[in-house]
Length: 115
Length: 114
Image (cartoon, rainbow over all chains, first blue to last red):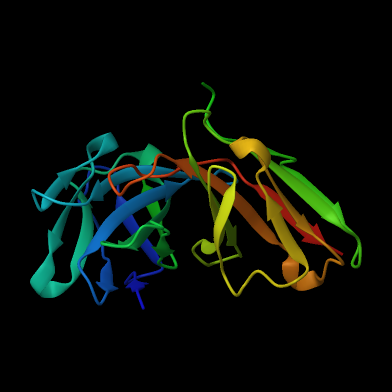
């Protein structure tokens, strides 16, 4: 069974500071990994994904994440936070080799950006 | 294409009533997923369709829940005899088949059972 752990339910940064949101996963097979962002009362928007190939993945809005198999991690970073980045962020895993591609989500991390 | 559309956006119902939600996916997508999200939690998988076939249902989907996707187009999720524990955001997503395509989510239907 797969699981996702997001360390820190709430992260607060200053505008212009580094954003680091942590995600660790548990999977019996190599996973596909995703980060989604959710704004209040909205659905989720895909930020970036790792399926195969390069382990450093670049996404939208200046975010990137690195798949580290040895650490079973897929942390999300952004060099300089913007006020518009304030939202909830979800890490998700899908089992590679399966065919349903259903996602198992973490509990989310709420990012607050202070002026 | 305007993305994934869900209706209604909000639904308040009395306990014991039946409710039905609708999802219109991106027309080219053959996969459609339903998820449920409660406060402070990530979305949880409920069920998914490949075209019109319902291929998997979570054990979260009790007998009171039923989903359909007639003709492989829009989908409906019906909850019979609603309970307060059914209060949640119900999210629909669609995608192409395959791991390289992330989901496109709709804005969700927020259900409140009073």
